[in-house]
Amino acid sequence: NRDIEAQQQVKGDFSAATLNYDSEECPWSRSMRTAMRETFKIKDYRLCQRAVCNANLDGRDIVCVMPTGGGKSLTYQLPAFCGTGVTVVISPLISLISDQIMHLNELNVLAAKMTGSTSASEIKQIKTRLTNLIENNVDRHLALLYVTPEKISKSKDFRSLLQRLADNRKLDRIVVDEAHCVSQMGHDFRPDYRELHLLRKLCPSVPIMALTATCPPKVRDDLVKVLGLKPFCKDNELDGTLYFTAPLYRPNLHYSVLPKSPQSKKATDTVVNWILKHHRYDCGIVYCTSRKQTEELARDLQAAGIRTGFYHADKKDGEKEHLHEQWHRGEIQVVCATIAFGMGIDKRDVRFVIHHSISKSLDGYYQESGRAGRDGKDADCVIFYRPQDAWTLAGMLMGGEEKMFPMLNFVQDVVECRKLQFAHYFSHSAELALSAWGDDAMDPCGHCDNCMRNDSEKEGRDVSLEAWQLVKLMKKVCVSKSRYTAQQISDLARKGKVAPKKNAPAETVDMDRVCGGLVKMDAEQLEFLLVWMWTKGYASVKYQQTAYTTTAYICAGPMAFQLSELRKEEVSGSGRTMVTLPKPSKEKKTPKGKGKSKEIVVSDDEDDMFEDDDEVEAEYLN
Ligand code: ADP
Ligand code: MG
Image (cartoon, rainbow, N blue to C red; front, top):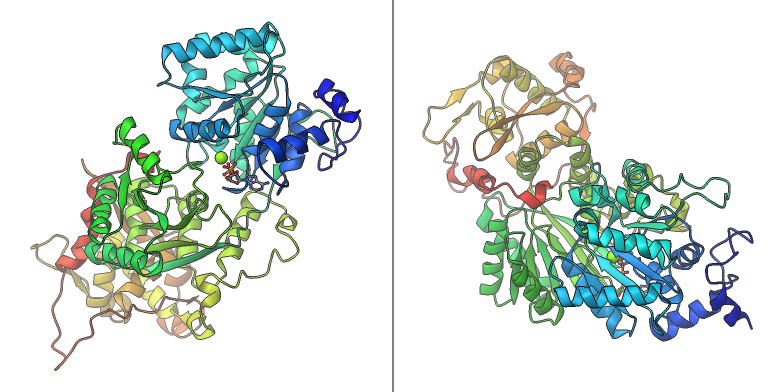
């Protein structure tokens, strides 16, 4: 009988047979399918789950990149359940571990955790179990043991336990979840993950599996190096590390970028109103940049009658756990959080993920927004964007253009389908075969904001003259010692003068002499254009640090000469620089009556843009 055979040789001599792991021809296939249905209550494999499970049971090193919510957990939990030893899972957050344990216990799969908060008696119990396992003294073996990376880096005791398990062939595999945290090139580096290089040294014969949702090639190569995985498998070798990826496109997620007011009160009101209008009774996450902002927004939402909590790194562990529980039980509907919240959280009915400000990278944004709609039902992913946030973020990160630009291109692009933007980005950066997205990989999604826009809104505008004027202006002010923020450059360009500080005398620039007149453009659009010019190298950023904040100043960039060396007549109307600018927002105050022109230098409203700078968010900068 095949099934009995499978039990006996679950880690057997299958390798030699075939490398086609995506099949049901493996010795353990039938028992694995049964376990999937009966124990895990899952009807069928999806994405690359089957192949990954098979490769796991065949003892391979694996890198598996699957979208958030794709079902990465099953790819090691099912093999763990089918095997005879223990699978050790390294996972970055206690909340995430608790979630998994809860879920596994419900399914009656034996799983335990060892984290900083596990009591001594629990640890003793687990150790006894494992010792019994080593001595073949069990009827039901502990299938999964979850630990935080600190256990590996800090506990000698635990390391020697691992070694003993491995020496006795009772350690089936080691799984590193959220493995991109290993790499400093990634968007979420965690120092304790670095120490995971110890694993391969401690137990060289135990296969290692790395799991993540985002993995550009640099990160992938880095994690192979750090974890000491075998070189990637070539030509169906029987030995190297196997690399699995799954389609990244999630058709139930509806992406859009919405305009955000320069005033913070209005900006929060927009978020509150959007939730009231579109998801009054649904579950959602609002990502904020600062801790202060999470608390303020939560208060506003609460005042609007929405049950809201907030979450950030300053909260005590107990408070965090409490919030998680309330959220899971549906007692809290919306969580306002910094990016410290949500990694790997398995809440399936999140109907919207709002970004109150842009993420620091497109990988990060993909990951964060991907926490919506894990149940496969429709969900909204919305970013509220204003150009000044680009400079605020630049000041916070002090560089990192390489990661920021794809994010900025995403929010500034009001033409291309969001799905295709992700596809281009990931196919380029993760060398993902687009065929993995299916035959319609390059078809627009048809339901994102850009797909819904009509053609007239997508028309490019010839801003050659304005770009040329700005370049001239930036060159001029870069030469003089003055330093100007984007907003001040915008004021100078449109009005010829600016007050560097509140109540300070205005500085002026003779715009006629510098660039043949004032730049005729709406303030919002001009700031948008400046961000565009930054991403294209026409502008660059210099940083100045004070005790509390870093300010980003705008200068001419390395490509500026391409415009500045031309004469005005050569650029004006030349179609050299075509950009699709967003429509000016409707709420914009239009001058009424007799066209009384106000002499605004720096109004309170505009000064508002600096208010969020006072607090640099540690989680954000990690
Ligand atoms: P992630 O890839 O983000 O780690 P999870 O492993 O947490 O995703 O899985 C997300 C959800 O999808 C879980 O609720 C899980 O039970 C469910 N799931 C996983 N695999 C399948 C499948 N083959 N069919 C249906 N649901 C699945
Ligand atoms: Mg996960």
